Amino acid sequence: MLPEKNLRPGPAKITLILFAFLLSGSFCQAQAENEVRYISDKIRVYARAGAGHEYKLIAPLVTGDKVILLENNDGDWAHISYGKDREGWIEKRFLTELEPAAKRLARLQEEMKQLEQNSKTKLISLTETNKEYRKGNTSLLREIKELRQKLNRVEKDYNTLREESAAFLELQSEHRKLLAENQLRQERESTILEKCELLKTAYRIKWFIAGSAVLLIGFAIGLLMQAFRYRRKKHSGLSLK
Image (cartoon, rainbow, N blue to C red; front, top):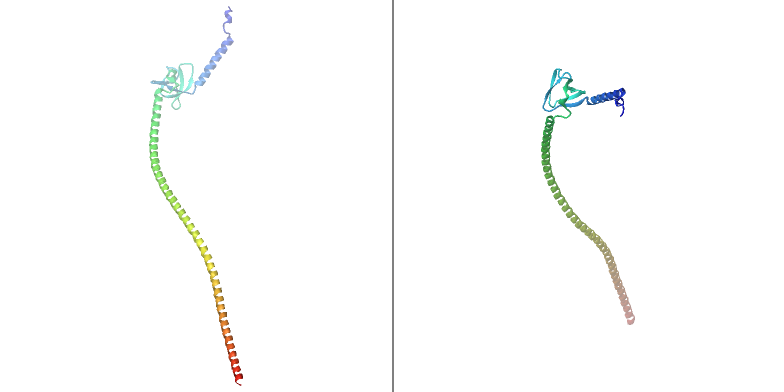
């Protein structure tokens, strides 16, 4: 076995252990400072002027009161602040990190009440919106029906106009064709009339020439007969001598 003196820690080791212990305590205390704590459920306690029952009572605290942890030492007491710029000491066993159930329940009930109120308000709003939507939808359907009727009338009028336009264009084309034919007929009539006038003129000239020829022939026959008579008288006179 090893000698007993070798099993005991030396002064240096004890100093290091104590320093580490104090350092860890200070670190934990610094971590705990300024943390939120609550007075635990269903109690009424008093904050004291110091860390002990010998200090006077300075303020009552009830379940759910919110306090700020200022100092958390190794003892049974915690240094807290509450209210506005007020500080005191209270036993740690009356503090809890969790918000008390009664306070949570009251807050949840208030939240549920608010949610219920908001839900009712939204439901009323949605109901009114739905009514307006239905009203607007009915009006929109009526407008769509009227627009469809107008569209049908316009399509009908368009088809009628297109048919009438087709008939009008056909009549217009036929009219133009008749006008062209009438123009050709008038031109032919003008040509025929001109020819007729020429024929009439030629016929008049022919009859004029024929009449002149008859007159000339008659005049010539008259002269011949006069000459014949003259010769006959002359011949008869010679015979009597």
